[in-house]
Amino acid sequence: MTLEDASEGSEYIVKNINTEDEELNAFLFSLGCYSGEPITVVSRKKSGLVVSIKDGRYNVDHDLSSAIEIA
Picture 1 (cartoon, rainbow, N blue to C red):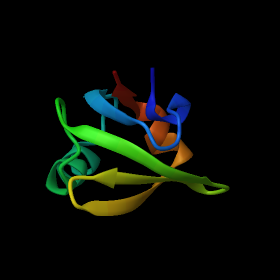
Picture 2 (tube, rainbow, N blue to C red):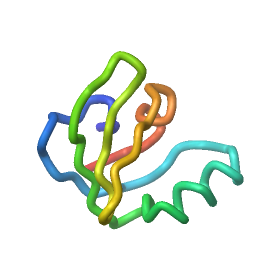
Picture 3 (spheres, one colour):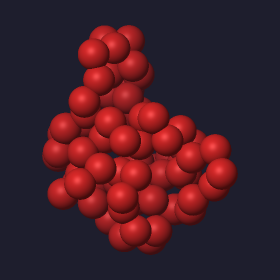
Picture 4 (cartoon, one colour):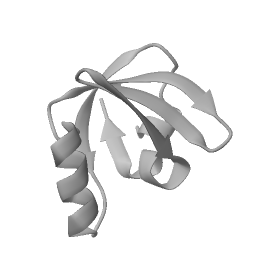
């Protein structure tokens, strides 16, 4: 299941990030978004999702949310 399919308000664990872009992987890692970390969908917007990772909230577009696998 990907982050795009996640329910609002539920906490999930990041399983994998499916992207070939090393710069994007490094950026997500700096935010705390990597395998084994909890992530929560706070709300859905037209442009993407607002997610909570650790103590921060971030806007994630639909392409990126489709690349983040969760359990």
